[in-house]
Image (cartoon, rainbow, N blue to C red; front, side):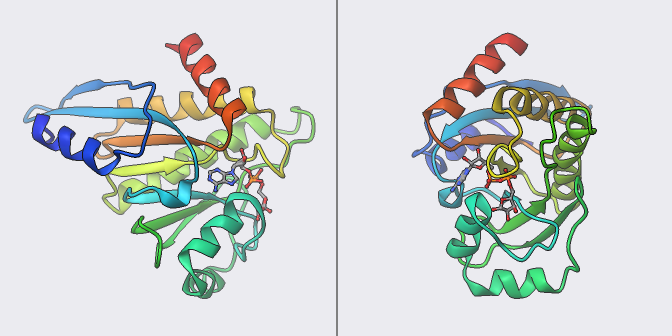
Length: 204
Ligand code: APR
């Protein structure tokens, strides 16, 4: 259950966050009204104090550049050691590790599709990344989770198309599941941030 006191605490915890958009869904589960928040944050995902951050990883799960590299640097070498035990991850799937030196308790590693022009099932594969990451989060009773813009860097997925998929999948999940209370879309740079806000305006 979440009440105004809890909401205030969440805002204090995330005081560095500039949340320009908030979607509040009221869920009546028979016993309590759940308020769920979705927001957009411009900055570095490794700095967020949430239950889980999502990593846009590669199939080996052994680290790389972009957000993957930033997460491994911030979490420290124990993260790579745990990732080595996971036997990789298929594209569209998601696996969880601890967050080690991160502020986040957990890291959910998912592997987005490489963009080949849009006719190779890229959209559905990217949607699966969001669905499976959220399903793992639910299994671990994670309440707050932050996503980077999966596949939009090295893997070349167009930002606007990817952000539509991200926002649509998260909203669908929040409407049909009770457990997750807060989702943050993390945009690295002004153009990604502007794109997310534009897509949100169009979709809501
Ligand atoms: N915080 C938040 N977002 C970030 C950060 C960060 N610290 N660093 C980069 N990003 C953003 C990028 O700007 C991009 O919009 O994350 C998005 C995803 O970019 P990539 O990290 O390149 O991920 P992706 O396109 O999914 O490619 C995955 O890149 O580094 C490798 O190991 C990784 O091989 C895998 C591939």
